[in-house]
Amino acid sequence: MRKIGYILLFAMGCYIITACNSGKAEVQETVEKMQSSAITVPFERMECWASDSTLKESPWNKAKLKLVHYVDSATCSSCYLQKVAINKLLFNMETLSDNEFYNIFIINPDNKTKNKLKSKYLERLIPQTIFVDSTNVFIEANPNIPPESMYHTFLLDESNKVVLVGNPMLNKQIEAMMLSIVEKKLGRKLGES
Image 1: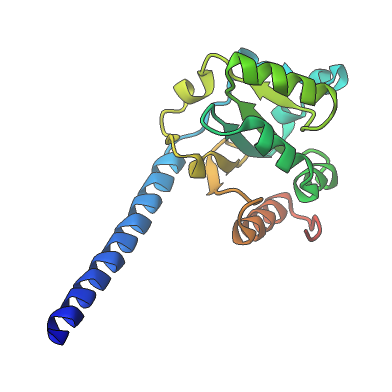
Image 2 (image 1 turned 180 degrees about the horizontal axis):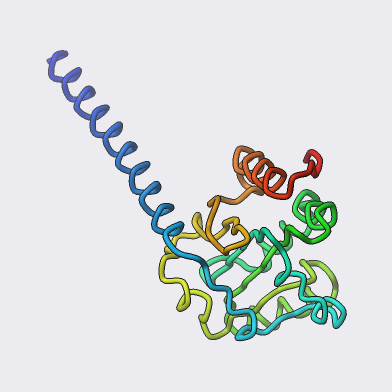
C-alpha cells in the first residue's frame, strides 16, 4: 500500500513539474509572440485626459521608451491607477530621464467606471495623463496582446517593440530589469527605487 502511495505521489509530482514546465513554455511563447511585431498605440483615436500643456507637448510621442499599462474592463481601473499614482519610481523615471521614458496608461472602462475615474482624475488621485479607449482601438490594433492581465504591462523601445513584459509594481525582479534596460538604452543612471 505504501508503494502505491509513493508511486502516486511521484506520478503527481511529475505531473506538477510537467504542468509548471509547460506553463513556462506557454508564457515564453506568448511573450515571443508579443515581441514579434511592433505595438501600435493609436493615441489620436483615444480620448486623452491631460493638461493643456501636456497635450501640447505630447511627451509620449517623443519618449524613447514607453511603459504601457493597459487596464481593460475586467480590471479595477481605479484601484490600479491609485496604486500607480503612489509609485514614486515610475514617475521619478519620467522626470530623471527628461521624459525619454514615459508611462502610457490606457484604460478601457464602461461608462459608469469612466465617470468615477474622471472625478478621481480631477481630484488628482490618479495619474495626470490617461488615454481612455472606449472603442477598443488599442486591442484591435494589437492582436498579439493576450487577454490575460499579466501581459498588459510592458516596456516598448524606440521602435515600439516589446522589450520586457511584466508589471514592475508587482514584481521587484521586473522592476530591476526595467530600470536596467532603461538606464542602458538611455545611457545614464536614473537612481534606485
